[in-house]
Length: 123
Image (cartoon, rainbow, N blue to C red; front, top):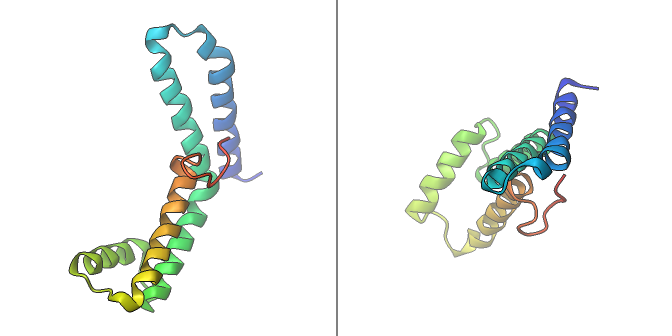
């Protein structure tokens, strides 16, 4: 088992313990905070399991859009933001950019809130 897999497993056990054993004992006034912690643990697990692939996919899509495979994801995102603000994409590329943004958003939602659009199952 790799280090990251062990980390995800540890977080899953911590969340399950919190949800099954601790939450029932928490008073109503602090139940929201306990649920917040459980949700944060679930997001951390999904980040470990899905984050690298989501970022790699986004980077590949942006690099393909610009034809610049040597740029980092941060540089590609910054360039996309500048170009969107400047209206650099005309009607001919609008659908391509829309699909790229939709795929990037779905990758992020699979981590942060998978039930929002059914992009993944929550652990």
